[in-house]
Amino acid sequence: MKLHEVRVHPSKSLLKREDQLAWKIAGVAADKVAVEKDVTAMIINRIIDNAAVAIASINRDPVIAARGMALGHTKRGGATLFGLPGRKTVSPEWAAWANGTAVRELDYHDTFLAADYSHPGDNIPPILAVAQAMGRTGRDLIRGIATGYEIQIDLVRAICLHEWKKDHIAHLAPAQAAGIGALLGLKQEVIFQAVQQAVHVSFTTRQSRKGEISSWKAFAPAHAGKLAIEAVDRAMRGEGAPSPIYEGEDSVIAWMLGGRDASYQVALPEKGEAKRAIMDSYTKEHSAEYQSQALIDLAFRMRESIEDFNAIRKIIIHTSHHTHYVIGTGANDPQKMDPKASRETLDHSIMYIVAVALQDGVWNHVDSYAPQRAQRADTVTLWHKIETREDPEWTRRYHTADANEKAFGGRIEIQFKDGSTLIDELAVANAHSLGARPFGRAEYIAKFETLTAGIVSARESARFLEAVQNLAKLPAGELDRLNVALPGGALHVGKPGIF
Image (tube, rainbow, N blue to C red; front, side, top):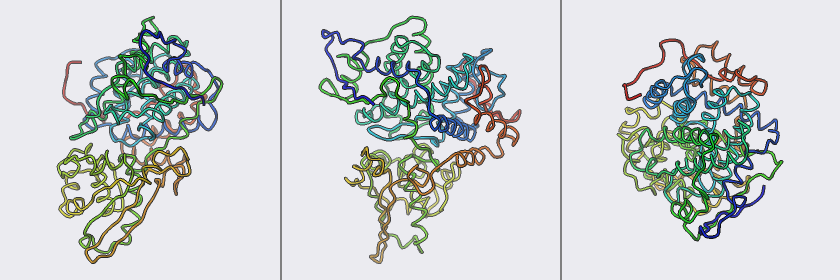
């Protein structure tokens, strides 16, 4: 990896494109270095993971709406939609919109956390949609996905967005554009313009994850994918972009991030260096914000030592800055303590999540968020006894580059009315690569089969799993086999709109 300094340059300095971050990102995307075997295997795992959570959400309102919009843009020889047979295709940017929303709706797929946070599996829907529409091979798709993961994760390691109240899709759209460029084997110049356009149109605010969180949280990454496809299309037609997009005196660093005096150090693979960033990401065993994964596992463990929940006086979760201020009481969001809050808000309330995990000892993507579950009197009582506190040591471990010290969990201190305490801690989730039960291919398949049971047929499930595990050998024009279809009549239809 090579470290690149990124900072604002006045227009009069005429910063050479070779010195611009977008050009360097494009260079990584244009480098046709071979994808290593373990990376290919992990890409297959994440395609399985995405399909699992997409099918589980297939008839939820945001997904129905996104699918309905996409079906207003049918295209022969286009891209497939989750739930529909492969012969029914739409324009690729709309497939990215619908499929990306389905993948993101339950907040149940992979994650990477560093200077900022991300769900790099959001790269897959737009890259796959373009691969299908353009008749590419499985190997082409693998190269594109490896690139998308690499660029997004490299940006997330280096540039914090949430500090400046910007949503994390600002790192996603350029990664998706780079991944599509790699998939199609485009020249560096074309990818450069596409990346810049994607950055320019994708900066949005963090209000999508603050206060009363709405279904836009599911649409946002899909929106980025749609923007990325359109950016690549324009660049392929010879259109340019605002430049330099990161370093310009009126561009994103100067006015949307750290300001004119800010400096970021971004590490990118050197020419000929394999793209391996996907191996540093991790998926979810539980359908909740990633910082809650280890704390859910910890709550399951601690509940075995609690005889009477009414005897609890207070629960304090000692954790990282990010967990405390984003999903904890440090966010100062009253909605996070509201029994009538939306599912999206409850998913971002570690107080609610720990209360339910302590009481139930299980976590379900539907039942754990049901209104009757959230409004249960004893749950509300326990929930309102929970607070979070930032612990500098957990913050340090959250940000450390040392994989053996990396931690996304915390310490739970349960204080009882008789003065006794129960204290335990867990650094990483059981499913994490350093956890007690790391996810491998068998666990990804089990997650898929569990989430799709009763929704797709056993035959369709087996067909998809066979096809995806043979990804590297899929010939041109056969990537529609990566779609998962429901039986006829099983898809819900929503309200009509413009499209």
